[in-house]
Length: 376
Image (cartoon, rainbow, N blue to C red; front, side, top):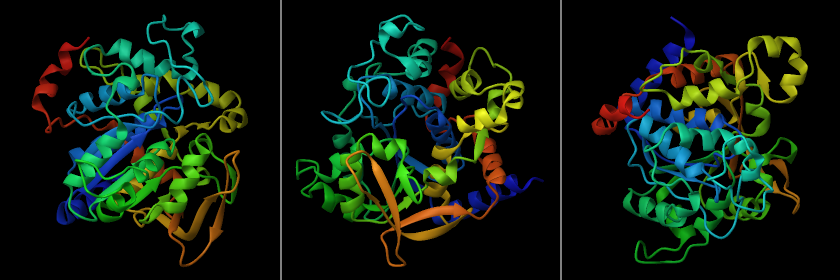
């Protein structure tokens, strides 16, 4: 029996004894696709009883991000999960730095729609009609409302926030005021309800990282003022954990399809392509195992804990400039933890692959399960 399967059994047993980890998942779903792998892993862990998914929100707006989240939720039988998106600030459109909304009515494959790397998510909505409520993320509920409702309804100190995108929603949440949902302001509500925040963000020991730099002001505010521990799965850790080829190379199931498989099959380069120029593909964050698994490692740390497969360093990540630069400052009493290698990264990749390959249990919503074969 492979080590990854043994670990899965051990952690499932541990989770069943301690109760499922309560998770809010926050993702950008904009250009890269390790977000899809991360959400797939989260659903597989929920099916195993290791976590309870409370909400799945987007950190981008004016695009197909929320609809893409809903397609994956629906595949795993959880099409009724709360979803939301930021309002007013943050990244908009088809990629970080865009200045306008994606034209969701433009034909696929035409840059007229300003969809660029966001094509994969527009295609997901086209291929899975009826599996989502919000084709335009701007039509989804305000992420602030989703966060506040979910947090207010949970036991104190019980929720883990896992973010694998921009930091916009965390900043906005901290700045919310008391309302009819809760008499607490955002920072007080987080302090009362959130156990920890696990973030895929920042670059060690310093530099610029995609998730933290593109809404740098939100990153600065959130990192400086978040009142509970923050665990970072940073760029350096995840860059050489590769996963996703296993699901990309599974046969196309046709009717009752797998949107996770579709995304990876459409975006992971072939083995021959990698072999032809491995150094070039490595610079583009691909290897024989698939795509760099930044986001999936954050999910593992969020659900199974930072002491599951990883060593940790304590200190503080802070933003050092308006251009999105960050730095890590070691401090044995610091409020932040960054994960480092303990179990080999190849084995971590295999654990991620095993989770992505699991079929949906669909126990959360048998109605959605019954409809999977009808939606083609």
